[in-house]
Image (tube, rainbow, N blue to C red):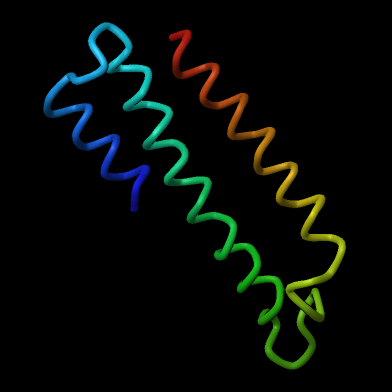
Length: 83
């Protein structure tokens, strides 16, 4: 919620001056990343219903998945800010 609030306020007020566009972009992208973490966890621990792909939210595979999501976040934000 904080990232979404920062993004919205930055877009409306331009409080960060010349960096307002960058802060807004990073904040909105961070919101997507933070939503992906529980989405991936819930999906992999519940699908398929008879035998989920991952048995527990504490499984070590999630550390790898979250790291990959973070790297994709960094690449995406870098491309957005540069463009």
